[in-house]
Length: 327
Image (cartoon, rainbow, N blue to C red; front, side, top):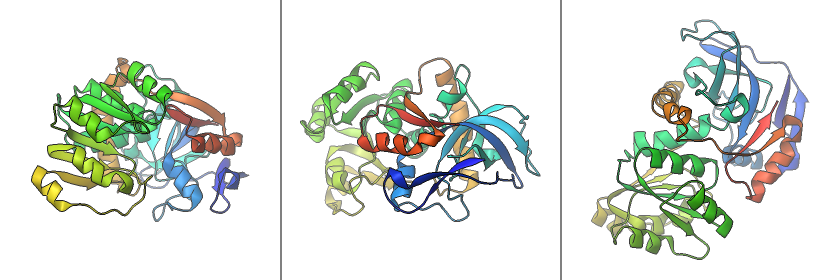
């Protein structure tokens, strides 16, 4: 099979497509014929040498795929059949024509979604649902601030939060992306972070109260300001470190608001946790996708042979929604 390898840490040019043996599914695993794979920031960070795979995971990048079940390893107890159309959440190995994955991390695709587009769903849906609802316990009517409205995570988070009845503010870096967030995604407050103070914008939108939940991909650069933007009993959930990993925090501000700062990552979690998250996504998110209230947004799809071009486009920051690789 063809698969992508990282020859050394660096730019998109270090991504190389090679011919390798297909994986054999182990106990409890399914073998999937991959149709498409999502490109995520974690893949970019792995390419740059900053985010190695967890112990035992494939060195091939790629954390989500869509495809068809090709075969079963021993002891698979879940009710799947060869040829089933599925998506899978991975610890690695997605940039390949075949992948072996624990059955717990595999679910059938939602009704009405084609196999290529489906690759935009598993990583984003699992990340957003687990953080906003399983961790932060976002409630209907609460106010949510999302940093990065128009990326893969952002577009999913806005739609999911709105579908569950939250009010949503979101930041973006250009007027075009702000307009997309407002017109296509339906955010209540769209903030151009290059021209506006997001703390002030959130306070104005909430009569001074602040955000009940903040979903943040920036990290250190925004830590102090995010805490300032929180409402009493607010929850800041950090899922990315695009703005660095170390920052000072005035704990007095956090104490005065009875607020919480939570940091999570999805990739290194145990199979059982990932399985529970995917089961929750299937039960609570897939019906919203099937009835059209949540729409996976794909910006561009590149053939696997053009993986370097796909990463160049990701690095440009011009995309709105997901970038995919097709097999």
